[in-house]
Length: 533
Image 1 (cartoon, rainbow, N blue to C red):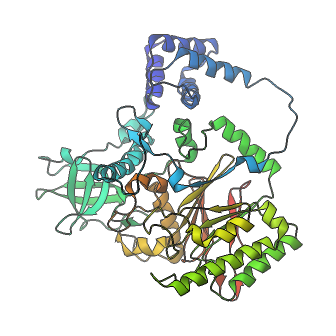
Image 2: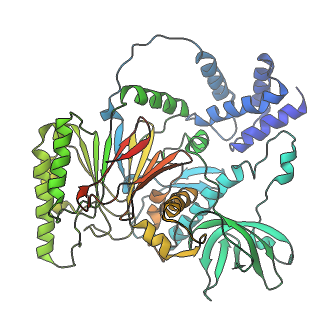
Image 3: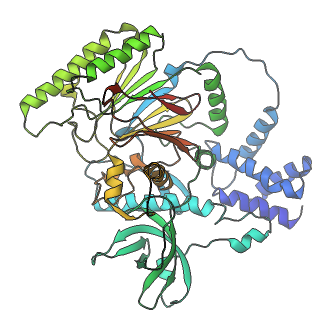
């Protein structure tokens, strides 16, 4: 085999953080020769094998010939035809509501170029080290996906595209190089003098936006990670020529590399299993729905009648959803601290809701009810992630509704191969209050698109500094959006919307009580889309 083909094999496996010994390299060469793979198809073929190898539970950094052999045999066996009796899927055994405080913490390891599970228990107080590590994880997770992007990681085959390859630099490489142009990646932040800077692991540089006409699409806030291109000046500032969000990596691409990592703590599945489950869900559960309601103000006179109308329609049309997600706020005003009368009203309203649900026996037996607290609801803590509603208020709900889930904010629903993130926060207003740059004359529809693009590109629900949005540092990972989820519910008092970006469906159901109508959204797992009802 030619040396060029060997270089391709080594390069592809190195891309997935694996090294090849002589035996493994020889084994792969034999496979290519046996199947008479043409030179132009070597990279594609080896890419497939590398992805499948990476999904194996016992995959090691140094490639094991035994594991490679198993991957190859599975590939050969996949073409065999077997007739298996088609059994209907059981959604009950494939649905999990994952609270933020139950998710394992995975750090990004520079040494291994992969995720490593954190040792030891997580604490709500955190430490100085954990605060630094949380922000460092945010940066490194985005950066490793940038370096894998086609614009930064070229094909192993010679081509003219190499001439247009972008190279990231560090702030420490700016010194003594005034007049040169650089592409940097880091976090937007203000220094002690109040000037906007770009900060990375090696330092920071002050930004000069005087030569920038407009940033690229998206919302840029303090705490966002951005790609900035500019010219370094004599007065130690970077004259910005272009600024943009990092490219978003699809769920399939991330899962192909880190499919063996159990980010949710509910068991990892391979991409092949995900594909098979998705096909079965489309066939067997085509009509299954999740209802999502936000701002379910139980103190509003019309809310309970609206819920009763919704339940009646479900019964009349024999259409009972598998899941109903109720997002707060569950009170239109909140509960002032120490106001026992308002606290009593809050509990009475939740008790009334429990009785209403229990009055529909079929819905009570069939539907999972997920309660996600809002910013004004009473919980143990007020910073993100928020604990579930206090147990003192929900005793009747737990006793009368057997499938009730008191969830954190945010929380996740794992349904077969899908991951659905539910987040109740007035995020649009918070992002707009902390803008450091946005396109001029932005229309309302563009703002919605920019918000979705920003949080998915940033791989984080709240891409802000902890001084703007406090986050428990040991649980910052529960706000990550990496790998990209299947769907994200951004429950916000802002206008309703729904859109799909890079394969991730994002929607805001809007406030349940709106004028003379009751509004909510219905998510369909088989189509991975939502409808406004």
